[in-house]
Length: 345
Image (cartoon, rainbow, N blue to C red; front, side):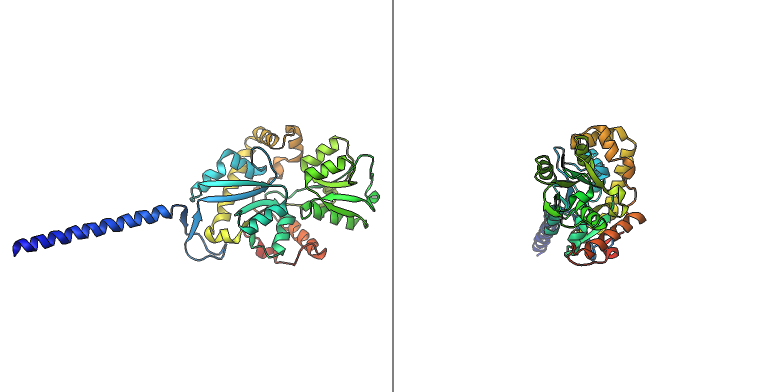
């Protein structure tokens, strides 16, 4: 009998060890299968989530512009270019950032709404127009607050704003330049003007062929046209209320997965900004690589001093409020919305 008891105890011990081994194996497999996310215990108030969230390992970011390097300008672009932002995001389980350039803001907004992007940086007008349609986004940063729209005429064409009556202007519908030109013509009481939607390269080509009488343009591309002899009819520096700002927006769906993302993003962006401030010559050379224009022209159009070191400024929010009211009054926005509820500080 004693031998039987010994055998029985041995069998039970073997069974116990086997069960423990299976439990350990099952836990290991579960961890492996869930390896694409990292737990986050951040506050749920940012995105309306509750409890622990899972941070996806891949982050999808959109920006305006296309170039061979596939980076935007500004602190965001510099941070990605140098790996500063990726290094910070890795601390929170994000191992890959996929960058996608877009020709204009409305196209980028569509990708954000559809879920192809998690967040992106674009002009304030398209970001707000998307929000006015019910897009579930939150504004987390105004990286710059001095986006200047330019009105460029064709050669041997209009010389003054008054000359635009009855003429055709190429615009990028839904962009901050769209808001600029509508506001400008309203201020000047100029009517009977036809708008035609064209992306920047198409608009520049149409202007060169004389198929449109003027076009809106921005930044370095507008200054290059002026250098080439195209007349500058107006620009937003003469109308401070028509100046645009940049906007970084994130989907509410992503915030549910990573409630602390706005804080982490702004800290990483600030680290990149401080780095480029210490290396101005290298930064301007980087911009020159992006757009193919001279370092001097980039210094003129995109001075480092324009980049903000805080997510929001009082002046920037005032510009946002003015732009939103204008878009609603002119019925460019589908419906009004609460600006303060949209901003996530």
